[in-house]
Image 1 (cartoon, rainbow, N blue to C red):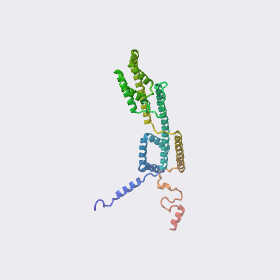
Image 2 (tube, rainbow, N blue to C red):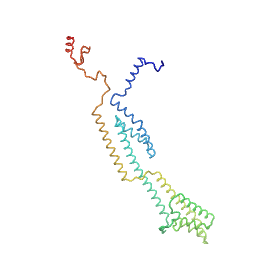
Image 3 (cartoon, helix red, strand yellow):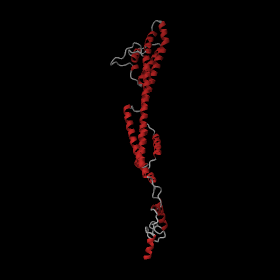
Image 4 (cartoon, one colour):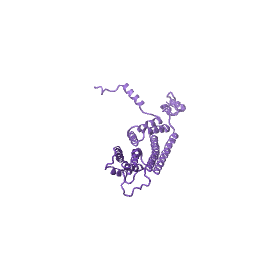
Length: 326
């Protein structure tokens, strides 16, 4: 006979039975409730937690913040079973969503303020650059380069033209490329600096030596001023683009208020249900640790002779009579 077919020894059987008695799990209501919470840590609940953390990360939220809130609520409520634990977690999720919604709304307001500041600076810059008495763009008119829509290509082209102007001044030349370059940059809507550059370039090559000397002294300053203004405009454009790139969703105040009200209502309802469950549990009471079988039945004088002289529940006199009859 193989070792697998050999019958178990009495000692092994006794040990197995003892182990079985020790592994019956928790016996108190609290112990069974705590054991039932294990279902929230594995299976579908664990998959949901992983998905929730990934969603938070993709939304730019910190899962650790939610975990801390959930832990604090768990320590506060002390859920005793799966139903209470699920309610605590649902309340934590909705509370976290409500706080994140409010934070997103505040961030949206801050973004609007930052954009407004940049746009105000740009209006001030354009107001300073605009030549007094210059006419506005007509409907359908192609804007000159400096009034075109902002883009990296726009600023690259403007700096290239300013480089050419500086080089032409250094070489004391006015090539055929000068008129088209000025037209591309300003059209008929010169900036303050652009108007001075135009007139000074003309004076630079005039027969009037005094006017030429003045142009020679002032022209580099106005080219540098125009370059500085364009650099400032480019910096503001980059700031605005960065703010928009880092901005969250554009939230509407009325929609935010409705979502907050809905979440608050759900939190109140679930909190009310959790309180009801807690109240019922306290009314039911919780049994203490399981008592030995000998203590489950109440003892009384009529429980019979402890020495086994009569049946259980029979009086001593009746037992004596029985023995007489026998």
